[in-house]
Length: 395
Image (cartoon, rainbow, N blue to C red; front, side):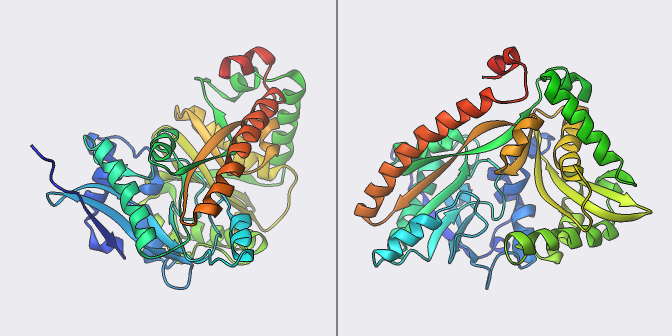
């Protein structure tokens, strides 16, 4: 019996689809009573970006959500955006854009399957259980067809899983490998158990940094769920604005975004504030996945030695150990994380370029880059803080 055709639809807003339909593809595990594996592809997170004006008109991230239907049943979806720049992506293609435009081409707009402003690995081809193969194939083909029909230069799928990278490469997309630093938890009972696995010098250095940070003159407080209050977000917004203005020229996210998170995702948030005399002076925000703590935003109004390391790295490790989480992903970049127990890991993306000559040049570059990244991961791991036997076991 012939399979019925799959219909691809493009939606300009998540309000055009029911939350339960999207989440049946994005986080089906929630229906079984567990926390979402990936909080960033849930309806509530993506909708918060849209509702708050963090994506949409004037942002360079125009929603074009991709959906795949079989007999009016949503079997797959993807957070797709039309982009007019390459900001907020963390797997960057600025050099590609420059080269293509120098050669007389028009690189923007382009299409991007991604979670905006979020360098966290997760599924990007969101498929309802039982429809994996046909759903992934339909979404990839649908995205490429959309790019072709609209004559855009390229399609990118960033921070996808290794399995999605394999599937996409088999379908003709180009596979790119990048690098991040993650902390792994093999089952530590406390922070001291983690320290015991480090070399003596690194162990002493971390203890020194923690003592220095915690002696900043106030208290480091942790909040999640019902403990979060609106005034916490007022303080954190000031921190986020400071960081955003220095790094990107302006913050990517709006104040309203954090207000919506407070209402819809409080149980998925872990906010750390450094408070002196009852007044917050620095903050870090983590998102809680089923098995992973995702470090996302940090900012401060006062500089205190090692406070950034304590709030972004060591407090995250404490939380992961206490809650039995397998990993901490502390965001993009930062070889300084290596000395603090975060080892290099490969991340993945997929790319389609419409110009055959340009695609051939980029493919050669990506082949060389993959080799270089693999070598770098190996070398950096060897310089990690763990005792040699521990590093070999993790490898």
